[in-house]
Image (tube, rainbow, N blue to C red; front, side, top):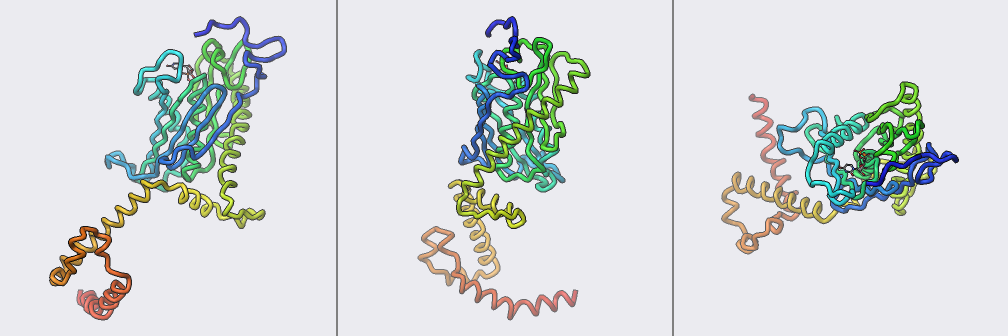
Length: 340
Ligand code: UDP
């Protein structure tokens, strides 16, 4: 670890990395970087490199963890063993468990959790390279990954830290400021400026605390613009979808749907093919139970083929069988109902 610098801010008001006290580090983001995730985002912020992946909403197992009235958000913050100078021991630590918890809570005010009762949304934030401010970097990336996954949210969450060095508040701490500064206050905010995460390490006065919040608000506002721009870029790449100048004409849900459909990977398609096969199997079983005599008339060739899909009746045959049901069975059923 490098030694404590004598001064953090020079006579021109610039910090060790040349930034002004209220300036954030350069940030860039890319979305849709993982084909197997429902949403993903890779973020570089200064020397931090973070990858966020979102899976879901999907069914939650074991079922006892399901929430009857809302979706469960699971958030895992993890630092790769190679992300810092001294190798980090793999696996959860007190620090990573705490960061995962507070980060999950930072999203709870914005995600429309009531829409998916019993389901789970998994958010993974992997820090590949750490240089102070990784929890806030992970939240910024996770926020965009959630939007990329099409998770309904009231808005994005943006995060940034404010600290104190040389008796002055500074925005978005770099590594020496984080290590040797007098205070570190990471915060996350909704797009309305509501604070959904605030932590504090060190000492500040009440007045400084209020100033820190205002400073952070401005930082988060700038980050929100980068997040929105990243998302906008993705959707404007969908050349086939024409976006009208008139906002009322834009069907946003169709836009998101079409994006999600096109990003479906092979696994999803295989899974739906398997599901189709299963459903076919169920129909067959029901038929064989209700009409055992049909089994004798079954074409032996198709039975030998072993493929459920080949056994599916052509559409016209199905239509015929439904017509039969309409003509013969329904009146009896109606009688039954009346008798009951
Ligand atoms: N850090 C480290 N080893 C650790 C934890 C953190 O070297 O086990 C470094 C890392 O660069 C991190 C910085 O210390 O970004 C500040 O860590 P902190 O716990 O304040 O969290 P962060 O600011 O990254 O959210």
